[in-house]
Amino acid sequence: NMEKGKDGLFKRLGGEEGISHFMERFFDIVVVDNRIRGFFQGKDIKTIREGARVYFTEALGGPKIYKGRDLAEIHKALGVTDYDFDCFLAGIEKALSGLGVEDETIDEVVVTMEPVRPALLGRARGLAAHAKMKDGQTILERIGGDMNVEAIVDTMFVGLLTDARVRFFFEQSREKIDTMKRSFAALAVGGFGGPVTVDDRKVRRVHYTLNVTDYHFDTMMENFWYACDLMEVDTETIADASDVLGKVRADVTAGCTVRLEVARKKSESAGTDGLFEALGGPQGISAFIAKHFENIQSDPRIMHFFTGAKLEGMKQPVEDYMAALFGGPVQYSGRPLARIHTTMAMSDYEFDSFLDSVKMALRAVGADSQTVDECVVLLE
Image (cartoon, rainbow, N blue to C red; front, side, top):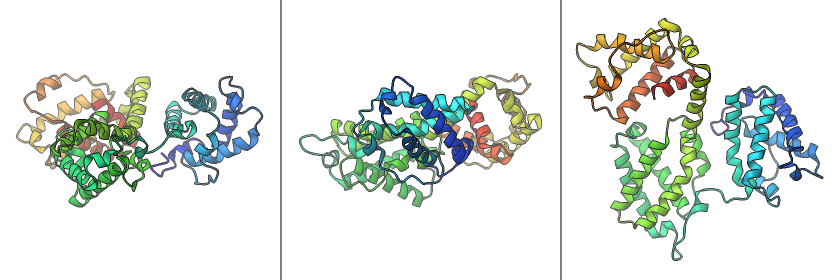
């Protein structure tokens, strides 16, 4: 939330006043927690709490007002372990729960604070910290330098632009693709032991609104491996380079993971009846399907699946299916989806395009972002 430059989380927590109450409750908990209270014994709790309040205000989407020391410097001599940090997160959950904050907002706070772990534990940060040396050479030197990395990235993007599993994400203008190539190459060069010119902490912000899953990330890495192989890079170096790039997996997939997991939890706990009503009931579903079919008939990515005289006959079965899926009092009585689509040879690219049409149609009929996410989870 912070990295997207939005203050939605900050507002849901009650703004500055809410953060103050949160910090009071949090410190009431941690100073008596036998597992971690030792870190606070003999310390000026009031001063620590005030510093934490200012830090959390900024970290959770509020005004950028923190001017204190770097977290790594503050905690350098404390010997904080993963266990200690997990207890710290548990304290956050307990404090927020005690204040009546919704579970999905608590989850978002925990996810937002997780990247703080390396600083508190004194671990090296950034891709370059993971670069592996062999015989005195960095990964960059073993690959053959900057120009070879750029050539690998060019070859990789040729694959990504034609790979049906991820092509959907790369249907951009030539200028945009060139920018993506340069950014990826610069990120890789810095991670492989060269000059660091790209802040890898920006990776999450760039990808947060995209539905990039682990499946998509693995496909991207497969294309990277193949491009390296074509450049005759040795297998060990490819493996080391892939391991370094794999460090950004969590940031690339974070947006999809957080939003869709929140939507999934909501569907599992509250059912889908509320979703059907949120979409406007029968009239809302009809309006959504009408807009969806309007979209796909002009979408060159998938329009070939919806041509011919049978188009009008498709609408009602699709509407019934969607209504039933989204919690409506409708019984879908059509053929199983697998049987309907068995001869169509639909690819991941085309299914992603279909979901894109669904999202555009839902937004066009007034669905909010959370409702759209819930629908995508069910369709996925």
